[in-house]
Amino acid sequence: MLLIFDWDGTLLDSSDKIVACMQGAGEDCGLPARTAADIRNIIGLELSLAIEVLYPEQSAAGVARLREAYVARFLEADKIPCQFFDGVSEGLHRLHGDGHT
Image 1 (cartoon, rainbow, N blue to C red):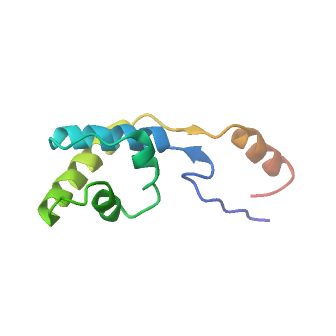
Image 2: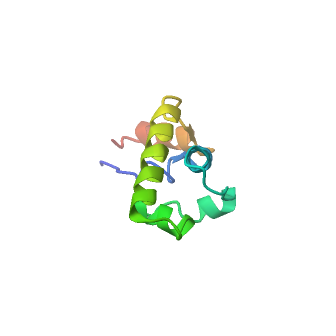
């Protein structure tokens, strides 16, 4: 049997990376800092919408500038892989051993 999993947020945890990249992008753009909790609350939203929620005072150009800064930071940070959630690796090996693809 073929099993398909969502990757991010199901098998691996990128939340710390997302928080660090968004905080760094805000700094790059000279914007007020947002807390880790604020940023975690927008994870899962489309990026431009997430930025609009975090920084509602920003113009469309400001959102675009912050989006570009975030993407640049995330691409750099993503060179180091995120960690699986606890138990994921063992669980996948067990499923594979049980004959699942």
